[in-house]
Each structure stands twice: as structure tokens, then as C-alpha cells.
Image 1 (cartoon, protein in one colour):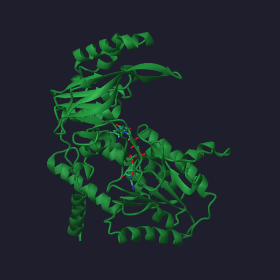
Image 2: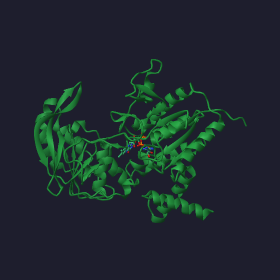
Image 3: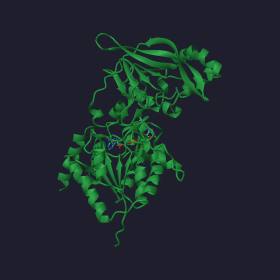
Length: 455
Ligand SMILES: Cc1cc2nc3c(=O)[nH]c(=O)nc-3n(C[C@H](O)[C@H](O)[C@H](O)COP(=O)(O)OP(=O)(O)OC[C@H]3O[C@@H](n4cnc5c(N)ncnc54)[C@H](O)[C@@H]3O)c2cc1C
């Protein structure tokens, strides 16, 4: 059989953007080595999408299994890249792959830097979402909740956090705080069905009355908004009624987390806003009036930023990309990694998905972005000298040895499939739709035990 020369791409991450990009690159005949922080592939499709969306999650897993089954795709799970990981980004560059694609999502924390927002009972939605989706080490941490939890933000992630607080934690009061009004809500009404039953309709009416004078002059009708916000409030939760009262506070920007002398949260100070037209888009403008909302726990659901320790220069929420579009291929620049300080391209390094545009869009968008990015990488590879098969194998071996040198218990494809089988059997034994081990140790131990049993 004739062995063709080709290219070797290192993919950092195994979320939707990475996996759909991998599929495209492998189809072009390139070899892709994936280094993934988590033992399991899937990223937020595995550890972000709400746990009860079994069908959606399993549908995506099926596609990911197919992509990873390609022999041109090599998978190393439990292999984090960056300052906190097993391998530095520069180590990867030293291995001289044909290209490196960073698809590590947005793993950093966006902070508003409010006084009092560091300390007990303040959480960031991503950590909480990872916790209830059983991603180690978040799965092993405690997230104590009080009786009055405020969620800052009004997108789909707020809805997922509210869903968890209502159904699992059964918190008595959950309040969503939004800088703008109900019309500018960023959540999808279909997602809200999960907790719509818990909306306190009387409180919502009062809230809409409170903001009526600020919104009516903008042509917004409160009765229509009330109907929109409550249209699914008759839909009862699957697991039965929960006592949680879900309320909204609109036109309010958080200013300060107020704690008592023991450090316990007693209130969230907010500033009242109005809405102003900025280039055809309604933006919040502070009115200088503040008030205190009595709460004891604060969750920020305001999106995330990339991990500044990964080894690429950040800019805005994502990693920096080429600001100088090429006239031949203008869209390509936004996928090319860039060093703003040196004002130069990071040659052969690309970014896709939430690493490029942090916290933007659903899986479908990440897929499209991964595929567009793969096309840019593919055009770049066409300009690069091909590597012999021997060189490609050698370099894959070098990646593996690098991980072994750092004593990382790497989970390759075969081991991950074993883990899947153990978890399926465990689910069947317990009569559950799905079962997940919540620690890396348990996952690794179960893989090992299964191998020993087989041998
Ligand atoms: C709470 C929540 C709920 C959501 N629900 C839905 C939904 O219901 N439907 C929907 O379509 N979309 C949903 N989304 C959006 C969807 O999950 C994202 O659009 C998509 O996962 C983004 O893909 P990504 O590959 O860019 O990043 P991610 O999915 O975040 O994947 C990043 C990958 O990189 C790996 N990684 C991270 N850091 C490193 C590192 N340093 N080294 C190596 N690997 C690393 C991670 O392990 C992970 O595998 C939800 C998102 C959130 C936050």
C-alpha cells in the first residue's frame, strides 16, 4: 500500500468546535492529535448542556463517537495544555506539528470586580454548571446555597442555573437580575419552560408596573410583555412541583455585594437603569439611584472569558486574532492567532469556537465556527511542506512521550470507550438514564479494573 505524505495538526480541546473541525481536517487526509483537559470528550456538550437533556446530549455523543473513531484522529484525554496543565503551549510548538488549533472554550472567569464579590456565597455560573454536570474537580466542591439566591444575567445559562436551584436545591427564592428590560431578555423562551411554573406572577406584575414609566415611552407594552413572560407558566416541572419562587428584577446593574461583620452576604446593591438608544440598540444607562436587594447568595451568569494561562495572548473575551484581513481571504484573519504586543501572527496557530468568541452561541454555532476554522487551516496547510508518514508517527509519539514524562495518566480513545461501557452498565444496574463518575480517580480506577478483568 502506498503511504501518502500529509500534515499533522494538534487540536487543543475536544468540545463541539474542536470535534467538528477535526472531522473536516481528517476528511482532508490530515492526522489530528487531540489534547483534551477532561478525560471525556464533548466539552460543554458533555458538561454544560443541562443534565436532563438526555436526548440532545446522546445525539451529540453519537456524532462525536463517529468523529473520534476515524483512525486519523488520535485522542489524549486528561491532558491539559497551559500553565496549570501537563504540557505548555510552547512544548506543543517545539513538537513542530504542521498547525495547532486552539479550541479550549472559554475557561476563565469574567468578573465585574464589584466590592464584596470575592468570598463565600458568590459563585460563577460556569463552576456551578460544571458541578451539576459532574465535571471534576467542580463535581467534588461544595456550593452552599442560602434561601435567597440572586442570579445576575438573563440568558440561557441563568435559566439552567435557575433550573438546578429550583429542582435539585429547592431554594425558596431565586431572583434573576437584568441590566435591561424584559424585552431584551437573552434567554430562549423554550428553555424557560423548564422553570416557568415557578415564576411568581404577582411579583412579576408588580415589577412590570415599577418599570412601566421607563419602558412605555420606548413603545414597550407591559401587558404584552407579561403575556410573553408567563405564557408557559402553566407547564409543570417533570419531577413535580417545587416550592421555589422565581422573580425578576429589571433595569438594575449590580454595584456591590454587601456583607455583615461576619462576612455573610446580606444584600446586593443595585443601581437603577433606564434604556437609551445606542445605534439602534437599547443600552442600559445608570440613573445614579441605588437600592439594596435582600439576598444571601450571588451567582454571576454573565458569560466567561478564555483562560489567560493557556499560553496564547488574550484580547477582549477571546484569544487575540489577526486584525489585518488578507484581501484574498478576509474571513481567515479572525481564525489566525495573533500576538498584539509583537504585532505579529503566531504562524500556524489558529483559534476556533468559544476560544475565538467567548460564550457566544449554541452547539450549532460552535460547529459552524469549527468547520469554517478548519477550512482556513486547510488552506494554510496547502502552503506547507507535507510530512512523511514516518515523521507524523514520530511526532505523535513525541506528544505521547511528553505526556508520559509529566506522569499524566493519559486516556486514549480505547480507554475512553471502556469508561463509557462501565458507565452504561452502572446506569443499567441503578435503573438510571445515565450515570457519570464524578472524580478523575474513579474514572481512572474503573478503566483499570475493567482492563484487569479482561486480561
Ligand atoms: C450552561 C450551558 C448550557 C448550554 N446549553 C446548551 C444547549 O442546551 N444547547 C446548545 O446547543 N448549546 C448549549 N450551550 C452552548 C454550547 O455548549 C457551546 O456553544 C459549545 O459547547 C462551545 O463549544 P467549544 O468547543 O467552543 O467549547 P467547549 O464546549 O467549552 O469545549 C472546550 C474543550 O476544551 C477543553 N479544554 C479546556 N481548556 C483546555 C486546556 N487548557 N487544554 C486542553 N483542553 C482544554 C475542555 O476540556 C473541552 O473539551 C450551553 C452552554 C452552557 C455554558
